[in-house]
Length: 237
Image (tube, one colour):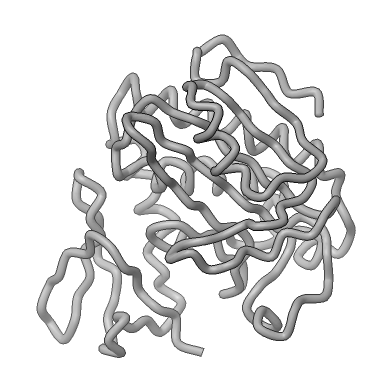
């Protein structure tokens, strides 16, 4: 990878690994801000609620950036950054959607996941992006996708990693300098999930109607507005 920090101070050091249990765990163990950890493979990758994250070697992007803030909106910042990077790679051929709080979708299938974890005053912003691959474990078949699957041809993983790291650096700097509003504005353009039938985690039909400045998602359930702090909305099959 030929990524070089831009000088914003958001990324000051890069560690590249062939294999690691989890880039988030390694980054938090290092214990300093501005550290970008990138791995070819994760042997213990995980998503929200400790769910395992499919992390085969040499096919995808697995990276974590440490930030000296534990703001709960970091996952939304990362989602907007990943959306920008992925959209630039796919062009206008496929609509990329942000599914609050931590997924990117293409054609209703999961392309990218984000996991933010904290230790003390340090946050690890982790991103897993499916780059190459056309086959999936049974539990992911029909639910996951990759850039290769969408484009019809493979991509160089290192180039995708550089694009994603640059976008993450840019949006974190913007968030720290200008606040959440630019992030929220982009989310509202790409995170409303209007083309899908949605439900709450309790199975109630709902729609996404907005986002509060504090990052809470506003949904409508049978004419009543609710604010999500944790959890998510589900896309009906």
